[in-house]
Length: 437
Image (cartoon, rainbow, N blue to C red; front, top):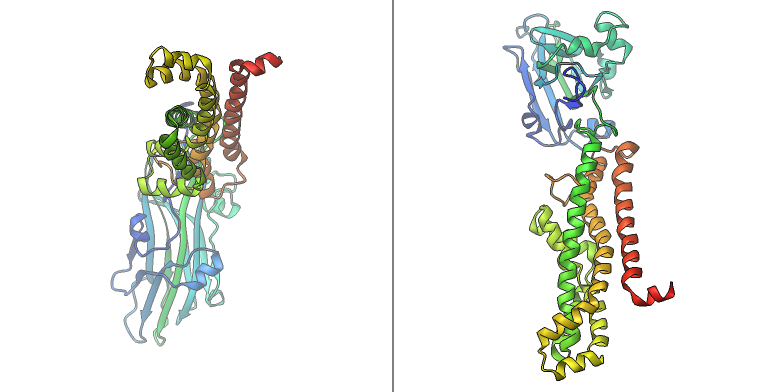
């Protein structure tokens, strides 16, 4: 890694921290283990309105339930225990700069017990380091419990021995397998009572902020933003130039044939052109991109085949004027065919207009691709400026200016550059504008 082997990048134990589907707990790699001989269970509940409304999450959560009838044998000391954890591989030799755990617990019911112990921890092999230790009593029934798990929190530092000790350095001594999770212990020491406990939990994750970042920092997955910006330049240029070239070629062919041949050919081609012109641009792009699939080449083809109609009408109007010139009449009188006249006489006279239109069409293609990528319809395997803005929107990082402004300004600057290039070519290639100067 650039800068030394002890540097680290941003890392998340799980890409998503919420449990909104029945299989989220398993697919995200979390494990559960209970005290032997108890009926502790963990299951998904899609209608847990209490936790969802209180925490502002989508409906759904995992629930821990435990019940025991009065007079039954007690579990072994310290009580009925449920541990939720996930083992992950930390690939860096150096520790993160900080780490922050997330967990929201909602106490639905506590019958027959006076308190429940809630502990969050990070384990390195057999060594377990607590991050928080809370006691949940009956006063917290119907409320949210959010443990403090930030390495900058003074209470977390005290668990590691001193307020001056950096927990990130202690918890992550080097590359290897680590375990993060929490444990609930139900003492269950009162025999005469029935015991019924129901606890929901959600937003379970551990995030580590790395010590390595580029000129523009890193995104939520630890990827360098400047590298994405540089790579996205290539993708945006490819999309803009290829899609514009494809649209100009189609428009040039349609305009030349419609303007020179006229009659039925002109009517058919122009009515088809009018039909393409009146189609709503962005909605049609969204539908076609969704149908054809999220491929960058599908996006280029769609943009090319939808961007020719306006240019075709411009070329047609120019050809209608050129075909009445005396040199065209002379060429016909000399026996030249239609193809010869179009290629040798008409096309060279509209070539300057083609260059200008090509330069002016590039910004439209770039902005269209960025719009589709921002809406999540572009190729997810290709990094582009629109894809970067889509990642900003998905991670709710709109206030991270170093992530938002670079791709947005790049789209604006590159589009403006091609617009100015188009105006410059127009002045160079248009005789009337040259005469004015």
